Length: 170
Image (tube, rainbow, N blue to C red; front, side):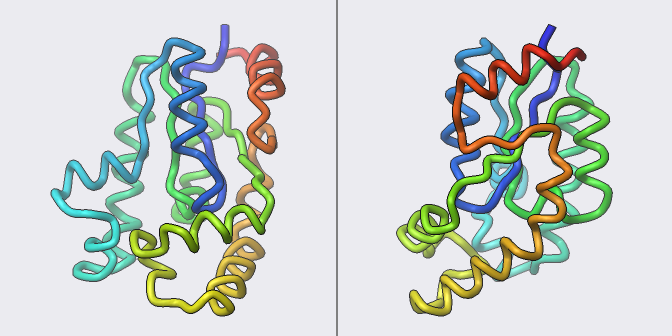
């Protein structure tokens, strides 16, 4: 039996939400996006949370949502925020609760995707293209050590991920 909880981690723009929905559908599981859950619970966009309340508050709320989703009994696929594995004890908690998969999308693709929607990305929304590239590269370098702790790394290849999940027992 495939792990009860499957956590997708990776950079903003790596495709966690899009791929997560597809994976959940293929596995006939509930899909949760931590950012969407936060927006629903707090009644404001992630961008607004960062601007009006701050990143510290966001990270604490993000951890609470993660722990709530971990405690749910139903099998699920969970798309984390890009920074979720990097704060508190989140990565270790995810690994204890299920399988962690790093969507290691090429950095140029991440930069293009984030640049196309940077108005909804609070850490980069006001940056010109050259600064954005530098910021995303630096962010990747800082976060990679957490992402590398994942149980499996993929470039979003569904067959490879399904094969890996077949080998993981809950």
